[in-house]
Image (tube, rainbow, N blue to C red; front, side):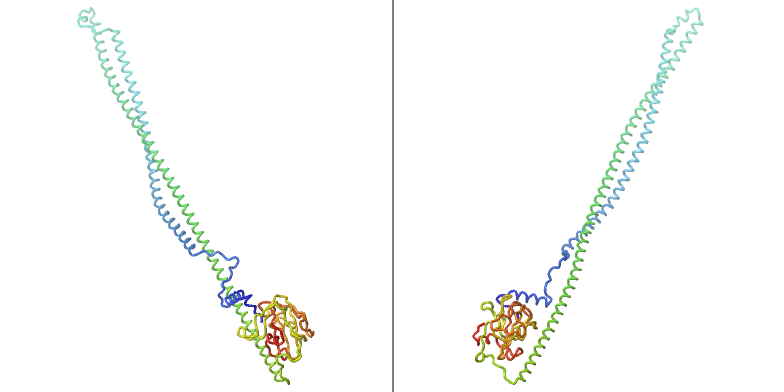
Length: 444
């Protein structure tokens, strides 16, 4: 019962069978669940780890270099301090030189004053000589009538001569002192100018060293900030990928647990179905035993499937051309199939193959729904898997009367009619419906 035609459902049935088999064996690949986390590849994780290590190594290398640079910067700062100290010392020496220049200027002024005074005295002597005339001769002195006046004149002349010599000596000394003072002032000015230039040069060198120190310090801080940012970015990238991998592993563990639970559920379902088949087999065995018991107690032999004389008219159970046989009265799946399966579309009308009384109409195990008609003369026809019935128990039907519509209820894989013919009652032995109807001139 319930097998769909190979021509219509072969590929679909094969796919369904493969899927069911995969589920039963636990080999199926479940569909990707919604919200499945991203799983970074091992290559991505290795690359992130390498990037972090490389950045850390670079940071360590630059840190070591910066420690060395820090020593150099400290020495540069010390050099700058030394240059500034030298600049300060030069400024102090320059101050001393400026003081020496002031002293030299004062000495020059003093010498100039002294020379001016000596020149003034010489001018006075010249004036006096002019006033008192030239020195008198010996003849004038001897012929003078006033010897005392002559002696006084001679004494004054000697005084003027001595004064002149003294003034000339003083003027000469002062002139030398003025020359020396001017030379000293010149040397003091040259030294002051040299020290001023030296102080300016030392100041410029100190400022250049200080600027270089500050530039190196800025480069140090910028490089350190760059490497720190690179290391932090690499660490964040690695942490992100690691967290994604951990999330995927948690999801994977949950998915394995879900699949294990699903396999357990399927195993329980298979066990339940096996138990149901065992129950149905037990019921079948019970019915068989009951039929055997009825046959043993029967007072007359069961009728043959051959039509009796004066047999009633018979017909097809479905409209001609609307169906085809998918399973015959034969072995199937290791069991004997006790009727004919006639595939037809949903809702195709089903007819009574002969007149008789409806002895059962409604739900039945395995059939979903069934209709059982007792035709008399020991013949019973059974129709299975309908969803909609058109008759009820106890009703009398005529040959060809509509009794139901094709469905796929019960143990069925597609819309079809399962037709059985039994002799000796509804629990009697089955006979081949195709042969039964063929003996009565109906070809399925």
